[in-house]
Image (cartoon, rainbow, N blue to C red; front, side, top):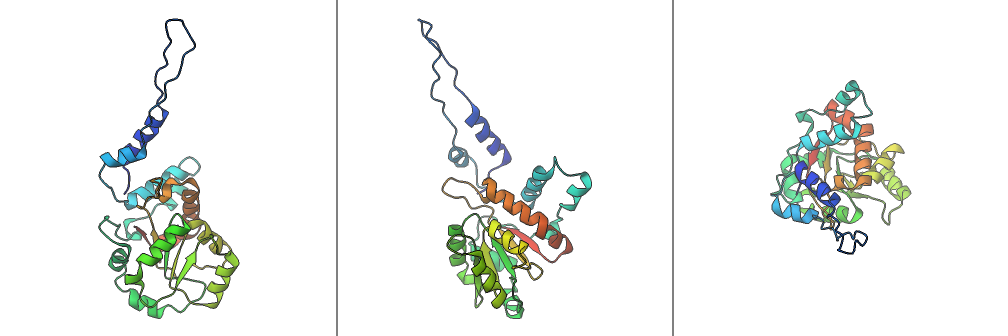
Length: 241
């Protein structure tokens, strides 16, 4: 699910509200009543699920860089509609979504022979979510090798060695670890055709990946430094699941 921006504002305003203080007849110090917060779950219950769309990502980039970049620099961060794959309309399983956006996967899988690279990158908010997505793509991936690209229980040196010695087709992990591998030249994105953001999923606190400050920053950094140019050149397509 994806909250409408107006719902996000409602949540913020509700959390800031304070109940009026009152004084008794003896003019005792004002006593603050316990404030009643409007939870994100309350707003979600009243709003229909709204899937993420490319405009949401564009708006996020503009908001993040708007105050610190020139007009020309902001234009260089803009992505045309042709840079995006169809977004998930919330009716898909992960496998069915991947089948829709990548109908020629079997051929891509067979022809991919390069080390230190993957054909498809999937970014999500945590190691546990990465494992869930890997399990749920069974009907799609076929006979290919999937690499776990997160930090929990896996040292970066181990991932670097695996990328250097073997051929992998799909990488699933967190933006922070993917960014670190790219910066150390252990993962090359020149062979990557698809980058999927796990945009709509919410964790136990009902946060999307872009609602978590650290994940949001690492994702935007990765997009700015390594992905946006590839998208503008036409070699990488972005998808919001």
